[in-house]
Length: 295
Image (cartoon, rainbow, N blue to C red; front, side):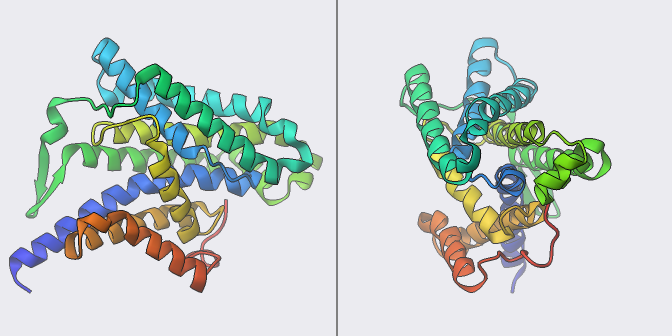
């Protein structure tokens, strides 16, 4: 293998890992919600779209740098998720499992149509000076925006892990995930914990939307593309398995990048779906379902 081929391989691998990091961020929010609440959030991609449109609106109105939009999108995402759990999902009671699917599907439709009314159907993007800049290291060129997105992903997931394993709130979340009744008997307000968890999951989706905005264009139904990837990531890693979701996101990003480079970019999304189907058939608990701890 000549030097050019080696460089091309590592270039593709690095891009796949950075893209996979964003997939991991999206999947982590979905997996956290399922791990604690056993709720499959079909509106997860639409919450990501909210993050993208918040970034777009702030950029157009105030020329605000897209990454500074995190200061607005993250808390708004958390507040929205907390509100939805308290007002909608908590009212489902014993029907939470089945009812949450219909409820989140309905929420997704409401969000996408609201965005359509507010911003129109045409794809929109933002132009920032560094969007076309690249960073070169050891012959490998990486988009500056993609590198920033990768670093943002690492920071967000690291902060979540610190909360989960170093704070009282984290203990309460893990106790609620493992045994809600036992947690209640120990004085944990599981209803409040579930609202916090749903808020964090939505916040992570919004953060991912902000990080994606300098790289892509957005439109009201853009979330449909990413909710599929979120489900693929969670299945690859094992439902409710946060470390598995991170690993699953990286695996998906690498599979897509290598497939696009060595086979055809026209079928980029298909490679992840093939991996998804193979895992469902051969290892339905996920690639890391038995080897990595759950929340």
